Length: 230
Image (cartoon, rainbow, N blue to C red; front, top):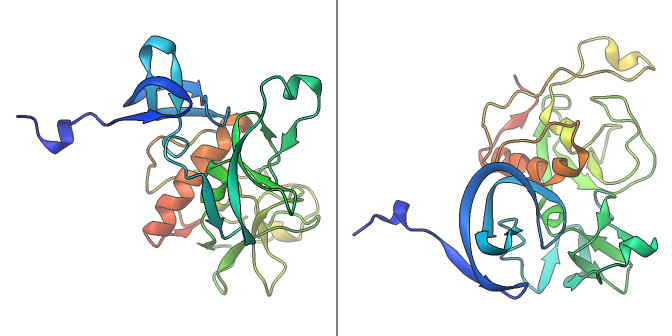
């Protein structure tokens, strides 16, 4: 009799007629739920080449969300072909297109990918050890790590002028003196003391970035990590 570690996890999902099995494959895939890219662990039907992110396979029909505390979010599905007509919706959090299942508050016109709702509400970072950084929307600001525009949701300090892109939370602070420069700072490659599973996607692949950033941030927060310490 096999051990629990050897047991293959499987599930039925409303989006597919066949049983989906949890597998780890090194190749990237496009989630047939939210239609964003992923890599590594997924629920898969090999016969139909059908894949789901782990979270998309289990996300509830209604979701209380710290990003939008006024109302619970409802799980919806973008009609096929709508994006081709140029009338598609954008995720309020990452600003990428919504092409499959997504969460929405119709009363407030708030939409989000399922994976984007899983961003931690707070993080700690070495660039600003005085205060915890909170997930927040906001107007135009510059990221305190890379120096580029930070126009939408980000991690920021409620008391100080500190703003970080989601992916820049995973980078070390700027070298001393560069924070006063006007030109953007090209940060060094990411270093991960806690390697995530699946692995982090490089920032050169923007469509792959968000699921990996969420996984990495969640792992770090659960471990009590102060990000940016190499």
